[in-house]
Length: 485
Image 1: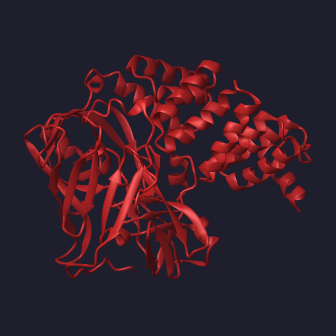
Image 2: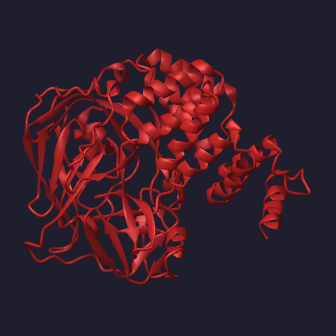
Image 3: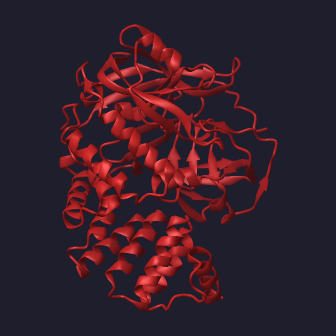
């Protein structure tokens, strides 16, 4: 059955073969694995890669591609092992360095990431994926622009979304305002911020928010969103604060509506509580946000601090990190330090500024969940959930996110999600297609921890070292959750 299935895949993907490639035909096997990965069929790619590796244990290309399949399945430990094994076979293999650097990036080993990407570029400066990776670690904007333009000229990416993102980055970096470094001008010291509650009705709480002032003139309420990166405001707020659009941008999120048009600008000053920044990139969205808010502010805005979100008592404590001066300039010169005695801290993974933590569904399926205070509820990926139990289509649920309405919504029976040292039972856990989230992260993401899970917790975030702590506190006030239907 495996041979017949592999044959069917080979015909459908490449259209030029009538039989599966010879297991010892390394070139054909590599082409099949890449084709499967490009079609997001990473489980089948992984099966093919393991068989090809078993038949060709001394081939570095197959070994590195096997590492790629482990990465896409979010098994970063085994991915790293295969990349290092590839370098043992060929110390000058650029793709092995590229893969190892991607694992380092996801695990907060910034120094190692930079070294790997630099080494990959020196070995193969014409590889488009190497160009893009190296562009992310160079210091000078003009050098980054040159690399990204070279990447576009290569025509290697068939992903229109990725191409637009690169073009938008080039456009933004070409503006003088974008070349100024964001600075913490209020001083690097401990501070406490007051959270406001986002309500729908007198007792229905759906999120948390901060009051933020732009350019000393316009104060607005922004939803605190650990699932977002940076600051997003609407056009009205940008206009009143005098923030001009400098370049095009896009926003993606839950929903079937695809990319949402936006722009990038730079705020001269951004202040919340006693914390103030200068020269802050801001995304300007052509849309309204949740009732009670004028935009979003990601927790990563405060990533130079140890962030303690007490959602019950409505406070954010920002504490200084040992050995830090508040600039974050030396972060690329060192790797994360994970203490052996880290208490209840969970070792997270990252993509961009998103934090993913390990979770287990019903004690059966290990996966990774996005920590997202901006999501009103918990979600699970339909494909992952189908491995655990039954899901049922439910047209009564109305789920809407940044990218609009979700048309195909399913529900699972009561599911226990274990994360950190906590377990939470989720009746009617909503199951969605989270493939876009997985594509953006570069690895399989199984779900989202939203307000349902996080609102009764003290959440501590360490963006420098990739550590997250969850502490449960019993409810201190009556609370009515949004209805499930």
